[in-house]
Image 1 (spheres, each protein chain N blue to C red):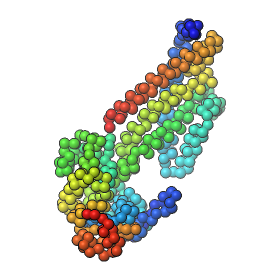
Image 2: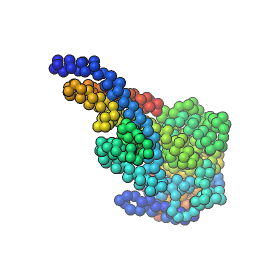
Image 3: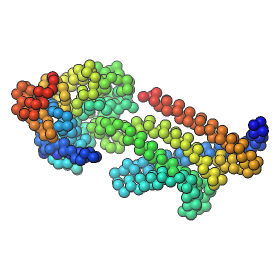
Length: 246
Length: 224
């Protein structure tokens, strides 16, 4: 479903020179697959994820999504982004819109649904994540966990083929992590193709079909969760896992 | 002291129309025209400033820097002498001064717009783009509605500033409040009294306006 070839990305930081964040990433995420990406900070996990829907533009390499090379400058990325939902660390819900408007804005504006259809779907989605009573509130009234559940539902309203999660629980108070992970778990169980950047090792182990360990801009190891956690092959994976509590 | 007071009462009795009707009238008119057209021109400057077309970018930066880096009185002089020369038809002094004030205000306001837009969290743009919205949909539906809350109060404050800055237009005798002072002082030779009257009027004007802006700002915040 998503395939990357030799992705390279660097950032120029003023005063610090150039940071080569991705150094040739080759990966393939199959339809229905759930892939979690773990690894130390600065290893390129989030950058890789953000490259997949071109929020970051790689300098080198190709990305194929459902058979189309989206890194080709002739491709209208906006069309393909509609099929790739993204959930951010800091929620990024729209504070000037009500909960319902947050969900219905994109489907209606992009003419995927009429307002009435979108409203119905918003209610159904909100029911699923237990936010039905907040439908007319503004996000300012929601807790962090509720905001993130709203953000997930907002992405789902576009009926994406794949969901990208960028550290979805890292900005949450500990007591709210569970409610968000539960929503993602259910989603994954229903067969949603997902790529999840996370620091929640227990969660990654439980839901993933495959774990990627990223370090220094490359995928250092890729394996089934049982294998990667029990018998890490790469010394850097071993070192990382020995430092992480889960 | 009593004498001062008596003089002020006498001046007001005789010349109140010059102060209140003409002076305040022209000051408010000049300020309103300046802020209104300054805001419109400011939008275009801001667009140029944020455009991806680099030469346009540099041009706007140059204009804004020059205007911000030179005294407004000098700009009024330039407008006063230059505008009539550039236009094929005769224009009033009021018009020329207005043009200079508008350009000055537009430059300040364009920076207000820009910082208001840039103050909106980048994550908002990313979220909107990740849903498939294009750049202009993102700007009009997500960024601008949030930026407006940063911009409107600052625009109100700009209006208060302009009210005070229009006093410089009296150099060209165009009838606003400070011109009233020059007229009445010229007839009565009572400098301090006239200054006091005009000072109080300016203060009342800006005080009411800035309280109004403050109340408006609180209402915007209450909506969040």
